[in-house]
Image 1 (cartoon, rainbow, N blue to C red):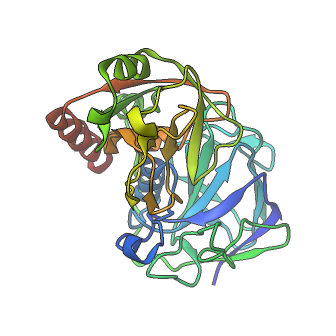
Image 2: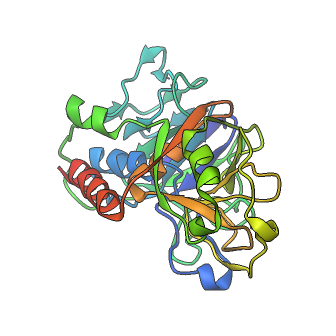
Length: 308
């Protein structure tokens, strides 16, 4: 079996696939790629199933030795990748010869870069998924981020490889957004019009305290509903925007808690969740309200671009 030797792990590199859906009632959030669009496209470029496991690198990439060689694709943010000193382009399949080292540096754009390898990363599944769930220490490689000296197995590709590409137009339309489109949250009507206007007119900075569990935002506080916004704890969805005491929004993300007791003013639409995964600390974002039909239409467009 072909392998990858981790020469340097980068800042925070984990094994991720599309996550483990359906275990929320057990208190297990889905985890999975923070930018699922980049993961899916990268896997298609190397001839994998869209949900094959890959490496997700955050802010600073690592160095990886391929003793037997491999076909790879780098997607998501540009981390200035090179193979033995030669530049590697993102968003296209690249053949790495046996003994070569792929090196990535600090991000030049968004937060995360994906290293997709033909055959996928082969690790033991937990609840049907290879994704690393850091908070619980489960999945991926021993439930943790990569370390220097780790050895990762590459799965066996079962289909004939035919190089795929993505058009410049498709890449442009899939590019991450800084204005996140949202639909009303389940408690949106708890907030008076003045609070809702402040929320949609405001500009927010992504806090340094943000992680895969949630993005804490800093900006003009949103007044909590009368009575302090107290509510019975209920299920929380991916992309839900909570307004806790203090009024600073929190966007729940892929390792979110599965329940919560703060009112939710809005929810990021499915088509823009990948953009949330590319936000860096101190990035500036805004919110734009869209209707349910627009949210569905935008998701259909994303799906067509990925499958096209």
